[in-house]
Length: 561
Image (cartoon, rainbow, N blue to C red; front, side, top):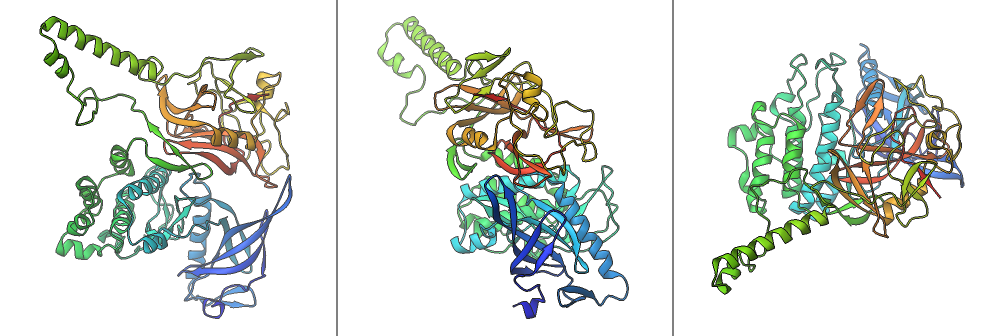
């Protein structure tokens, strides 16, 4: 296999900036690169741990050769160098995207006459393989995965990046969750919609690429509708088990709605896929937001979702503003309000009184079940430490009622870079006090712990294991409080706290407040001097991330024994 692919032999050691990678085997080769499975040693509190990563090597199949482990080039016109620069940009752009449904880049480095980047290895197989094993997916599972894929696209587009090769083969499954990979055709645009380079947009994959992608030239704005087309085609493949027809066939023969109807797909979903795969781009949804809104609108309340460490939990979806036009659902056998009373009562005023009592009772039940208002209410403080309230959730530590810097549970509070105790006007790699510095666990160390430094006494940042405890032993409800979206987290003893989705800060900007939550732990990411663990959540996810850049400004929720 290596003779054909010309890949590095097993046992080869690649020396990156932060780690050394030992090649285990070749995973595959594309037109512009070879991907390997590699092992890397990570030093941590428990000693050296062997971890698996994927390493992508820039290697143009039709141009590059290899002498020993060094890569040679047969390009006479600088073509290889142009694409090598694009490969480096791919790694750089991908490393900026911090989203649970986008593969995480560890580092990029040069060696052997070429460039590499290491990323997390996802061993759950591709979505394409998953579909092949099952024939086709259920509508419920398809919608769940489509929401995750769409959320990743939404995040990319808001950061000025297109994928341009979205398909089931470029989507991996991590503990049942979709993760986008292979950004070889991706393209970065600035805030004005101008491309970072003048290279032509890649043609994409037949069946997943719209007509205009093969001949698209930059200078026509930020064409997110090309990714929207591919998203619709990916959903089509999940539901039918068959590759979608190429765009030219749809133009000539029409959209194959019959295949979807034959598979029993709901009319609303057939309509959505048809819109996404319209051969005319103006007829497609114009943003991932539009598609995600439609998918969320039809997502079942109380659906089982794989969160955290893979343990199924039930997520209750609470609307911010219930639609008054929609009556409460009831079973078919249940009598209409007042129907049974009218049959049993001879006096109209008695019937009316009974109906009124029933209505008042139902309203009171709803109010009490929601804590007295349509918005969430959480348990009052069960005590204070040094003037700051806490709630006993029945866990090993007490959790503060609000973020450090906030005066109420729903307040966003202050943002801190990891290992720093003061807020800043700008959060960057250059002004970070701990980035690329070897620092161990900081919980309770007033020099690095923002909770201890600002609140004193026994307050401190939670450790990674204490965040895991919150994830694994508590129930979560995505809701609103004080007009802010976030999670109501209820402990095993029935007490609860609220964690607002406060977003994060980079540079001088605040990103995605109201959509995502990022809460630092006190635990560095193994021996990595760049990252630290944190709690991540959105409306569909709630888990501890494997770490991200310490220089970002994130929320702090303190704990105490």
